[in-house]
Structure formats: C-alpha cells, structure tokens
Amino acid sequence: MRLDKLLGNNGFGTRKDVKQLVRKGIVRVNGATEKDPGAHVDPEIDIVDVLGERVIHQEFIYLMMNKPPGVISATEDKWDQTVIDLLDEDAQRFEPFPVGRLDKDTEGLLIITNDGKITHELLSPKKDIPKTYYAKIDGVVTEDDKKAFAEGVTLEDGFHTKPGILNILVSDTISEIELTITEGKFHQVKRMFEAVEKTVVYLKRLSMGELELDDSLELGHYRELTMDELEKLDPRKKG
Ligand code: URA
Image (cartoon, rainbow, N blue to C red; front, side):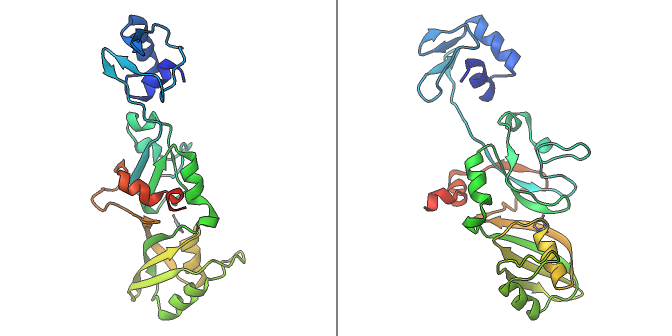
C-alpha cells in the first residue's frame, strides 16, 4: 500500500498532513529516509517509523455499538443520521459499515466493522447465527404464541420462518418477551408478532451468536471488541 495511506490509516493525520510529514524527511522505511508519499510499502514486512516511533498497522476494526433509536443502520443517508455518523474520526478512517440492519426505531447490539469476510459469515443464512431480542408487545403474549414460534410462523408474504425460541417475561396487556431467531428477514421480529396478531412497541437486540451487548454502553456509544469477544463472534473460528 502507499506510504501516505498507511500513515493516514494509523493515526498520523489526514492524507495532506502525512504527505507533509513524509516530505519533511522524518519518515523511515526499513531504516532509510523515504520522502515519497506514494512509495509502496508492505505493512506486514516493512518497518516504518516516524521520528523513531514505529507505525503499527491495524487493518480491521470491530466495534460494538448500543444503537440508539432514530438512527439508520447504513453508511450514508440523505435525510437521517446514520450509525457511522456517530463514530469519531479515528474509527471512521477505517471506512466501517454495520453488519446487517436494525430498524430505525430498534435499539441495541450492532456490530460495525470493515471486515467484509466476517460480515458475510455472520449474515450467511447457512450459518444460523442466533440473535436474541428483548421486546415489549402490545397484547397478551401466551403459551400458544410460544408454541407457534417454536414451529415457525407464516408471515404475511407467505414466508414460513424457522423456529424461534420465545421466552415470556411478562404476560399482560403490554407483554415483555425475549425472542431468539436465526434468520434476519426484513422486520422479522415485528412481522412474526403480526403473524400472531400482536404489535411490537419496543425492540432491542441483546446478542448475536455468543456475543452479548455490553450493558454499560449507553445508547449511541460504542467500543472496540475485545479479543475474546471477537473470537466468540467469528464463526470461522468454530470450523
Ligand atoms: N426484527 C425487526 O423487526 N426489526 C429489527 O430491527 C430487527 C429484527
């Protein structure tokens, strides 16, 4: 990759800043001063330093966000703020994107990364990655709903879902539930409840695979995944 890109991607300033750094003659590649910002370097092999400070190359970023309502799960949007707009410049430099979508009004666990391979694995229908949601439902959720979800329900477009595990926390005029599903159809949780004639009034994702939302993260806040969390999340690590 280009030397200025490597420096820019690793916290040494904007593309313009790093070009100046290089031209000043304070950047070395394998011990030799390099004044060409466009010089080709291999971050896996070449040792690059700026005024003696070694440049550590980070290619990927893996973030966990507690998505707030009112924000779109996309990289850009004409009208609304996106989850990427909530990231600081250091994180945005990696050009990350959300792994799948939560609806605008849905809160909770959202993974944001620039690793296309892990994204593909996590979203692949073949992998059956479980996702657990907490929801408030307008209507009394019953054991019959639990049985219906366990067999899969037919959505309004005729699609029959895979089984979902429904855990009823409160059964009342406004019920509270947790639902685990392995698919990710558009508005799936809301449509599954519509199939049993009830309405989701609040929805929050709690977990994806073995990765749980850090409940100390406030709405709209995010942090990098730990190594342990990344291993839990990455289906490739499980063969
Ligand atoms: N199911 C929904 O209905 N909405 C979401 O945001 C996620 C799952």
